[in-house]
Length: 241
Image 1 (tube, helix red, strand yellow):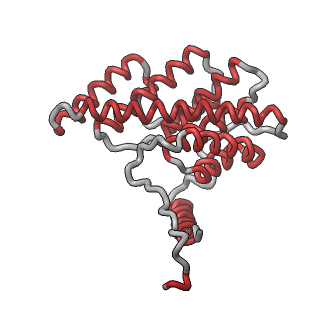
Image 2 (cartoon, helix red, strand yellow):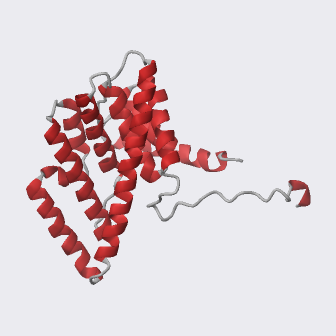
Image 3 (cartoon, one colour):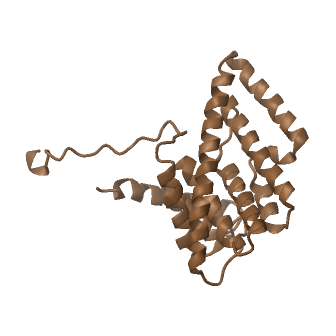
């Protein structure tokens, strides 16, 4: 199966975009977030990563069906009214917690840098889950990749709070990858993005979490443009062409 026919153009596009970013902006090559690094992995870290994969899959499933349910609800009204209702719902959530607002880039770094209380992390997770679902379902412009990373980061910090043996870097990276893979199905891309910030040592645990989440959410889909690869008819061969 010649996946290079899609992989090579993707790599060229990624490198082109990266080069333009370096030339046209002063952002540099530093990652926008700092995930706690680990010196070495332990056997128990693989278990924590697998558990994070299950947790991330649950988040992905909850987000997917919440968006689908809200879309059906919004469709009950006229199309021009949906963004207004979505905005009012988002404003109401923001009165409860500011974590419902924005796509979460700076908020993610704040969660990773500061030792937040358990209650604050729970509220932050729920606010972002509900806020992002409302945004996507009501037709506002914006995505859900960074919000899913944010949700994963909060769950990783919560896990570290409850179990000191669960090292922050391991579980944060694993939850971030798993939550995103469960929705986007970008197994390798999500893993590489997160481990580039946390260090290459987190690659095995993050990849394990991604695979677990991928397997558990294989029948759950939110992105309509995604299609399964069409299997080749075993009765056909190149010689028949």
